[in-house]
Image (cartoon, rainbow, N blue to C red; front, side):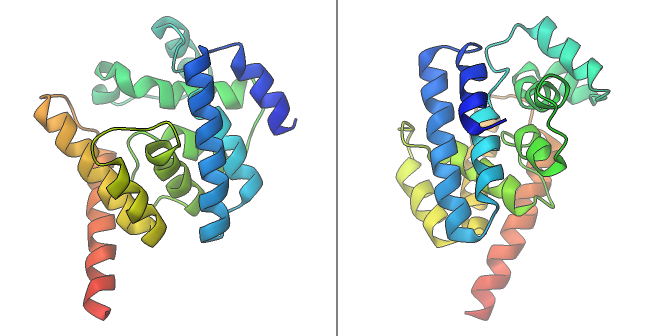
Length: 194
């Protein structure tokens, strides 16, 4: 299938604002993939599909997760906000037949990030933060970081996410802490060499 085919499929699964966001993430993912040497086609596909189940009912999301054979941790079971990334990965695999692990992981970890992210995972994680319609406090700083280095952008994104969740007294995925620490160490190492 082509990106246009995927766009047609997901446009029926979400409201127009979410579809616009998905298209913007795909566009930003392509830009970042070209800048940092990631696979441009995979970046566009993962970008357009990253929120495929964001507006799906929770029972449908859980069914997709179970059909894909994904086991959730106790924290994931109770953190419904994390489900759309996991169920999105499951949907793409089970319903669309995409077997590419890099695309599946880019979708699965686009909200939490994690340690050991592939180049594509990093691109999608950052593109979701910096897509054209985003206008949160700090988006300009995030965009500047994205143009400097992937690690700086990941550190900025992880810092934003962890601080926001902590301030709202919500659970924080262990993957986010691990990804934060890895990015912080990479940025510190880079600065010590400069």
